[in-house]
Length: 206
Ligand code: ITT
Ligand code: NA
Image (cartoon, rainbow, N blue to C red; front, side, top):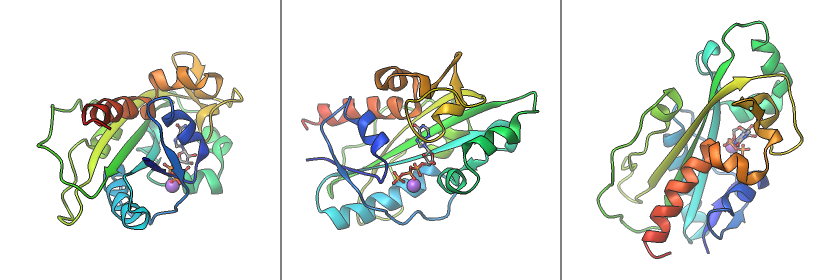
């Protein structure tokens, strides 16, 4: 069974709309990097060595335009320290309150992968930081990466659903916390990455 490596149940709820998986509550080492892809790939190797089963690591971040991409890879730390309402207040008086959410999924099952597929749409900073190239920096364990982004606006918190920054992230008039799981998946960074992963994983016969 595929192990979805996260301490965050909200991520697993969204992932289960795409494939069967079990939550592997493992706190892998988050290396210091401004690239979600590098963080996820490193975590995937560590998690695979720990689980000895196929694993999927999910690293996400919020990139606020006017804050030059902050909190980005530090989103988790910033949620725990400042909290989402203070992040919202940081940009409340700005004219430009645009932001992107990015998600990178890193898959490892200890095996090699067939040569890499189609070109990637690189539509913004978060995606560029995420990257869809397979990570080969550690020749020992191949890791395959899938990424997704969504653009939106930072707004005062609304909605009871979702998790994390969802109440302050508005996409086309609706915050992600006001969306049902399937509605969020249809537009979200994670939903886009999961759709790519799910297609690849099922084609592979899993
Ligand atoms: P794991 O690392 O154990 O998976 P985490 O919640 O720390 O759990 P991330 O580092 O990927 O996961 O998340 C960075 C931050 O972004 C963290 O504060 C999350 O709550 C938040 N986050 C991630 N995905 C999100 C989403 O879909 N909607 C809103 N916030 C999200
Ligand atoms: Na994390």
